[in-house]
Image (cartoon, rainbow, N blue to C red; front, side, top):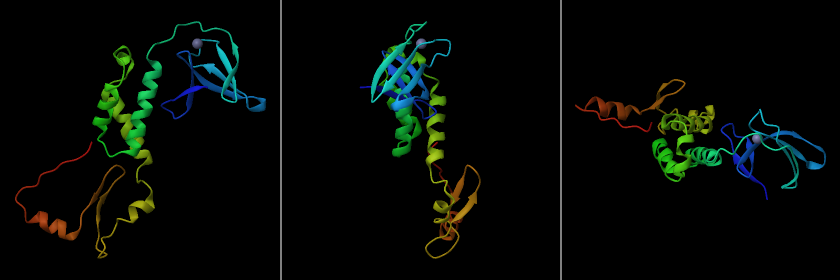
Length: 176
Ligand SMILES: [Zn+2]
């Protein structure tokens, strides 16, 4: 059985004894040729029907322990970002808790990880014109979208604005 991790670019990497391989090309009969992700290394493997059928050359470097965990955790962060309502910060924090201490130093900064998750959310989020237009008017056909820029949408009904205008204090909260 082959083991894979999903890279930051969304492509699959093959894991063989702790080494990561990227897909090089397709061969005949459903064969796939993989090359070591370390581009100075000549190690290659060929897979077919979920099995390694051929190995070429040996690695000219040692395994970087923890690299697979890093890829796995980063993919998992994105997945949670896309499927849950958890805050970005909480997602990063929770995933990092499951990472072995030995791999912790291989991770980018938390701010970078959070940015990955946010970008992913934006990419799959309701950026579809139609989705947003559904919310452009209230049920009473009054305007609901007040401000719309590339990275911000502010919704408010007339009643909301009127209510706010009567308040002495406004408190704001947000998910960042
Ligand atoms: Zn290698």
